Length: 113
Length: 111
Image 1 (cartoon, rainbow over the protein chains, first blue to last red):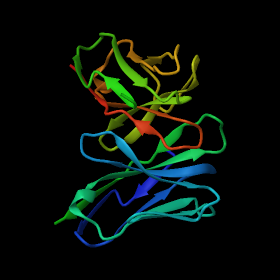
Image 2: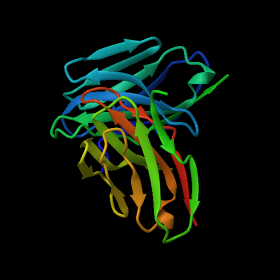
Image 3: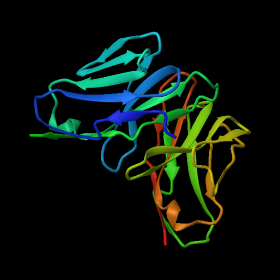
C-alpha cells in the first residue's frame, strides 16, 4: 500500500487565492518531499523537508511537517493559473536503507483565471 | 546533455511481446527507480536499485524485470506484455536523502 495519502484529491480555486494540500503517511521518515506534475509531463521537485524540521518556505510555497501526527501540508499562496497541476507528496522512510520514495495519489489543483 | 532521459517516449506493442524501456542518467546517482502512473493510483514503485548490480522489488513488480550493470543505466523489461501494463512509466534517480529527478516518461500501450 502507498505510504502517503493526500487530501483533497481535487481542488479548484480562483487566481489569487491560497491553496492547501495535505499529506498523511504511515511510518517514520527521513524526509518528506513535494513534487509537481504538469499534464503529460514528468514530476518536478518542489521542496524537501527533513524529519527534524517543522516548516520550510520556498517562494510562494510553504510546507509544514508534523511528525507526531505523521502529516504534512503544502500551501501555495497567491495562486496563479500556471500553478494548475497535480501535486504529490513522497516519503523517504527511515525504517529501511533503500533510498526509495513512496508517493501518494496526488492532489489535482485547478486555478481559474 | 546532463539529466535523465527515457526512451522511447511512446510505444505501442502487442500482447505477449517483450518490451524494454530504457533509462539513462548522467549524474552518477546511486539510486534509480521505475514507477508506473495510472489514473486513480498515483505513482506506484515497480523496482528500484541502490547501486550497480543491486536491485529490489517495489510495490508492483510482477511481470517486470530490471537490471543495472552500469550506474547510469536502468532498463525495465516487460517479459510478456499484457494489457494491464498499459501505463505511463517514469524513471527517476537520486542520491540518498536528496530530491529525485524524473525522466519525461514513456507512454506504453499494449494492444
